Length: 237
Image 1 (tube, rainbow, N blue to C red):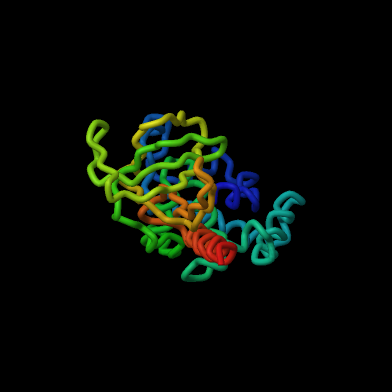
Image 2: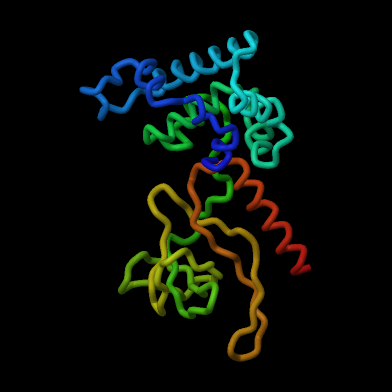
């Protein structure tokens, strides 16, 4: 979403001076205090109103006219379609400004979505609770194979009734045999499709693709998971 919010280049007219003047309490002495989302939204609405008033007065400069043109064509922009497609209500320019200012102030995308009631985030329906952790037993170039653990502990990981999973490597994380993988408190296990591989004995195994994803997820990512599950199942059949 951060990339999307830069598309309209709102920073061209969101000067530091305007923000300081329009957000209550944002003086030099209170610069360290984060403004509330109500204050940020009020600032965004003021800026949006002023922008469109200046359009009526034909007093926009060329850069601002370009911003307006991008906004008028936002629904057809590949980067912006996500917002208009998945939001539960119409997206206003003030919403984008609120999100941009909110991100700069340290609020999360989920907090902003909840405040603006856009409905871009929903409860993750693919969360699984079959296993709480997973024990790596083979490390390959792009992924690892792991057993689902019945007991979450480094020294007590029972895999008697466990299942094998393919887990894609994440960033710079180091993987090794017997390492225990588990989702964070705000994340859950998601079976994002199926993966087929040949083991050392020459047998073909089909196992779930395991991902750790947020328990509250944006609708675009939700659609990608659904598509991945469908596509991998089709390839298997």
